[in-house]
Length: 113
Length: 110
Image (tube, rainbow over all chains, first blue to last red; front, side, top):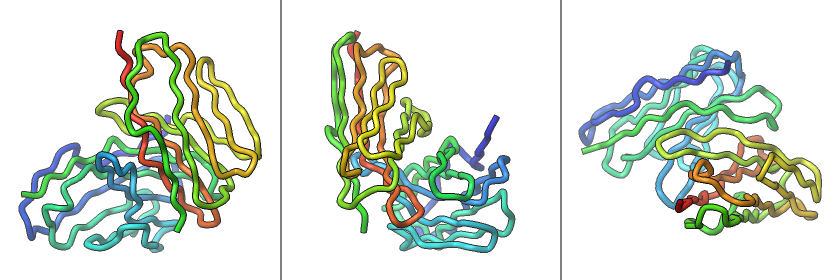
């Protein structure tokens, strides 16, 4: 059974803090993605990675960075958290090829005070 | 960049009524996927359509991909309370990543 896990379900941070969101998949997938989900806006792609050490900007990368040191792990970093980054963050993975389904993690609801 | 519009944003139906959500892309898609997110859950893959004019069925759910591969629809016949959730379409174009629609939140009243 496929599995994508995220380090926290709920997280509360203060403005200006550095925040790390971790995602791990056990399916040996090459591609991994970070989205944020906000009401009425659907899922917006922040960053993605097609393989280890590779990263590409999505539609809304400002204020975020990522790290992919190992194939199974994709980290999202908020260098200096701001209140407008309060959101649900979803990680996903899929096999290489571009047309396969994405498998999502349970999400991390981040609140920045 | 590629945009995928989805309507309606919300839909309330009585149990037993039908439901349809529509997606429209600004560009031609290579394929379209549909996901369902239950309240408090994460998106779960339902189906993928690849061919122009393709129609696929999963029990009471019917998925269509337009002839021009720029639009798609999901139709649920005789909704049940278990159908409650948000339905997302996601299109893949020339770039390899998916672009998600904003979702349709379905409420089924018993």
